[in-house]
Amino acid sequence: MSLAINKLAYYNYQIMDTFEAGLVLSGPEVKAVKNGGVNLKGSYINIKDDRQAWLVKAHIAPYQPAQLVQRNYDPYQERRLLLNRKELKTLFGKSKEAGITVVPLKVYLKHGLIKLEIGIARGKKKYDKRETIKKRDFERRKRGEINIF
Image (cartoon, rainbow, N blue to C red):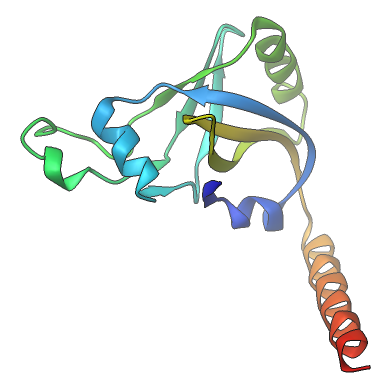
């Protein structure tokens, strides 16, 4: 079950490979994410020294019933990602290549745990974005014509 999808990442980037990562969250943050209070727009993954990965600029809204516990809560704070060492080394190596970035794609639940799908991505040029829109419109029209008959 998807809790949040970064649609802008699919529009602005060509996703080459995906990984699944766990998120380190506090208790009220978990409740807020499960209520849909997460926004991945404009966020990215920062990999430090090929040992740790951090989710940067993702907005997790404060959980309202826990306002007393979260007095100095920053919704945009960096959050640590849980990945295997092999995955971290792969992400670190790929992120150092020119034109490659690591972006969060979606947040979802898996067996009661909150997971983040991250992707190794290359930025699209303007003409690539236009072509994506044309293909999507063509597929939509094609499906509509099939449904008519």
